[in-house]
Structure formats: C-alpha cells, structure tokens
Length: 154
Image 1: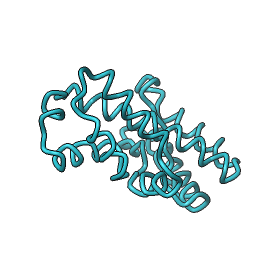
Image 2: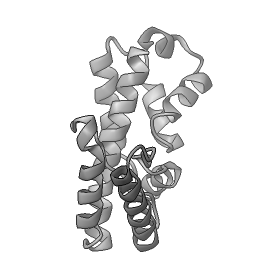
Image 3: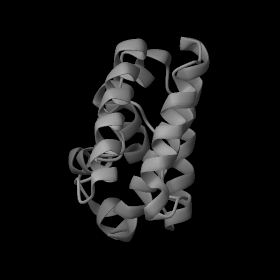
Image 4: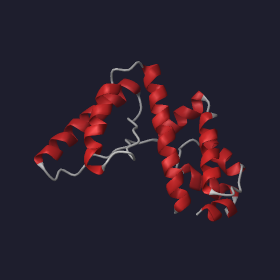
C-alpha cells in the first residue's frame, strides 16, 4: 500500500491519509513529502506532522473523532451492564470536555479492553481541561499512527 500512496495523485493521497486523521492540514503535509522509501519513514513523517499541528488543527482532528472504543454487544449480563456504564461514561466525558473519549487500546488483550476503557475514562474525568487535552492529544497520536500503519500494510 505504500507504493499506492506514493504514486497516488495528491488529492487521492490526501483522501487516503485523511482516514487516519481528520485534520486536512495533517494529511496534506504527509502527502506533500512523498514518496517515502519505506513504511517507517512514512510513519515518522506522520508523527512529525502531528506534532506540528496548531491548536486549531488539533481541534479539527478531535472534532472528526468518534468514540475510539465501541460499546460491545451484550452477550452476557455483565457485558450488557458494562456497555451501559461505558455509554454513560462516554456521554459524561463528552459533556465535560466537548469531544469523544479517545484511548488507544492496541496494547490491551481483547478481553481486557472494556475494563481498561472504563478505568481510564473514570480516571480522566477528574482532569482539568488542559491536562485532559494533552492526554487526549497523545491518545490521538497513537491512534493515527496505528491507523497509518494499517493503511500502509493494506
């Protein structure tokens, strides 16, 4: 997929990259520096472009995000209760901070994801808006790099 990204017309490359991060300026910057010799170089460029986002551009990226962790299907009574708790916590987070709760869950075993999300969201609800913005930005960086890695491996 790296070859396709490198060879795509500029607008098509921006569209592909926009699936990783909802900030158009980020996608344009990453597309501008093509061709990339390898996936590691593309990921490094993606990360650098993320760190260069302005506050307004970061807001644009946040606005494009949805809840990072979907509510699981209620296969058991426990999962049903956890799903209700998660929906309530996500709503409380959105009301407090004005954006979806973001958490990169790639490092957690599947069976622990829901517990980790609930634990994290409850802890982060107590943060100041400034502290939480910094944490949310770091989680968004991890999410976009994971998305970009998946895009590049196709």
